[in-house]
Image (cartoon, rainbow, N blue to C red; front, side, top):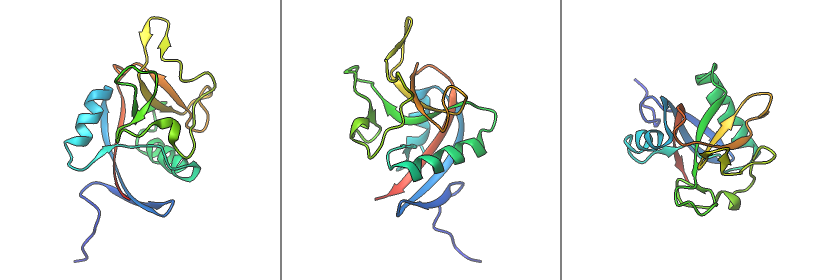
Length: 149
C-alpha cells in the first residue's frame, strides 16, 4: 500500500512553490479556532499571506468545504490592541506580499463592537475573498494549515 506524506485528514497542495497542508475543522470563535489548530501539533490557522495565487487557492478550499458560509477565519488578529494586524506567526499583515482588505477596512470597530480579528469573505459586499475585521466572538469556519518554508 502506498504511503502518503500528508498528515491524516489534511489536504496537500503545492502553491507558489511551497508545500501546504490544509484541513477544514468545523466552526468556532477566533480563540477556539487558534487553539483547535494548535491542538493539531505544528499547525496554525490558515494565513493568506503569499499573494494572489495562494489567496485564490485558500478561498476555493474554504468555499468547497463550507459552501453555505460567507465568512471564514484567517490567521490574523490585533490581540495586543495596537491597531496593527499580525499573522499568527507574529509577522505584520501589512508586510505581506499583498493584502486583500475590503475598501474601508480595517476599521477596528463596528458601532460599539471591537473588531480585532480578520475574516475572509465571499459575498456581494466582499467579492473574491476580500478581508474584513470582525468581532473575535463571531462563530466562523476554521481552516488549519501546515506549511513548509
